[in-house]
Length: 82
Image (cartoon, rainbow, N blue to C red):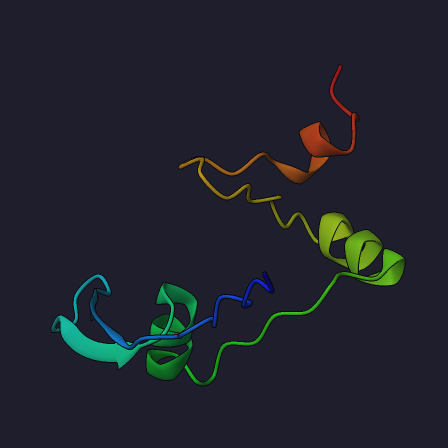
């Protein structure tokens, strides 16, 4: 007996996209990430290069970790604390 492969079906879901100080938006998308990308087309993301990390940390940019509210200051994440 030959088993059939299960077909993967993507379905649109409706998400509420919120932004502080803005109206909530209803967006139909396949994933939450797609819904956010639709609402924030000017944002971009790419993997940081070594030069990016050096430049931004030297400028004092904190390192933000997904799932944590507070960002780690650049000097702490680089191990430069006393």
